[in-house]
Image 1 (cartoon, rainbow, N blue to C red):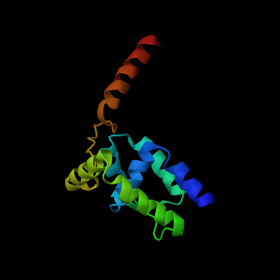
Image 2 (image 1 turned 135 degrees about the vertical axis):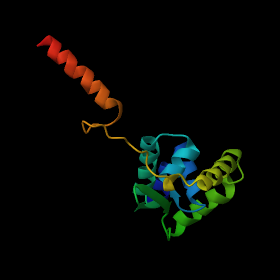
Image 3 (image 1 turned 30 degrees about the vertical axis):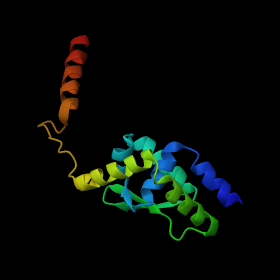
Length: 144
């Protein structure tokens, strides 16, 4: 009984239900989930952690990204409930929209994109931070 109650607690939030439904289609990178759900990494990761702690999903690191998938095998009643949800909810507009967007996002291969290039300045600092520090140094000297 506790397993079933835990499932319903885990899925009582719309975002976690959407994540679970997406994962019924296979493994997904957190960057794909972020793009489909249009939510920041911190929010997606918080909900994924809840599903993971509930024993519904597992994760594995692939390079710098985490990939998530349904725990296999799911046990008895848990598996039956997940199958029921997949069968009954996959026809709803929001679920179909999520799957369609997931296919578009996966075609872009977001997690295979190289990380943004950061240019190093001569002083060894990067980007606009160097300009900001230079401005601060000048102000300190003027006040001394």
